[in-house]
Length: 278
Image (cartoon, rainbow, N blue to C red):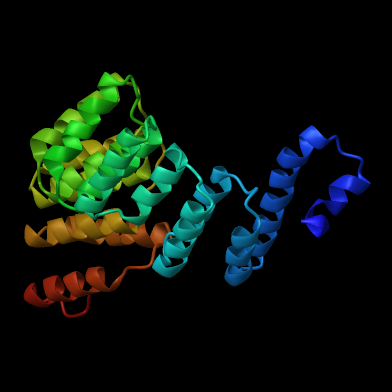
C-alpha cells in the first residue's frame, strides 16, 4: 500500500482525492499490462489492487472475450472484491456467451435482480446472441421491448435482425425490418446489403436483388466478395452465363479475387456448358 500511494503523497494530493486518483493510477497500470499482453500481470494486479473500478473489469471482460480461462479469472476476482456489475459488465458477458440462449437469459435475470437497467447496446448484443441460437421469436420480442423502453435500434441492431432473419429465410420479417429502416431514415450499409442480397438470392427474388444493387449504386457502395459470391451462385443455378461473365469482369475491375466457392461454381457451370476455354 505504501508503494502504491507513494506517488500520490509526493504529489501532495489531498487525502479525499487519494481513492479516485488511486483508481485512475491502477487503471493505467492495467492498460499498460494489456498493451504488452502480459495477461498474468493483469490478473495479479487485479488481485492486489482492490481500488480498480467496475468499468475497468468490464473492459477487461470485453478484451478477453475469446479466452474462457481468463474470463473466469476476471469474474472470480471481481466477485472476490465485491464489485457490483453494471450494464457494461453484463453487455460484455452477453457478448462472451453469444449464442448460448440459457446463459444469456440468466444474465437478464441477474440484471433484474440487481436492479441494473439495460441499455440499447445490451439489447443489441442479446439480439445477436438469440439470432445465433436460432431463437428468432425471442429476437423479435427483444426488439419490441426496446421500443417499449424508448430505445432506438442502431444500425448494428438492424444488421443482426436482417442477417439472422435472412439466414432463416423469414422473408416477412426481413421486409418488415427493411421498411422500418426506411421509415426511420436509417442508411443501409454494406453488411446489410450483403445479408439482403444473399437472402433474396436464395429465395429466388431476383427483382429484390436488382433493387438492392441499384440502391447500392445510388449510395456509391461497391459490392464486396460476399455479394459477388451470392450473385454468381444464384445466377449459376439459373444458368445465366452472360450475367456471370459480367460479374467476373466487375470483380476484375474492382481487383476482388474470387474465393474457392466462386471458382467451384464457375468450373461446374462452364464444364456443364462445354465452355472448356473459360
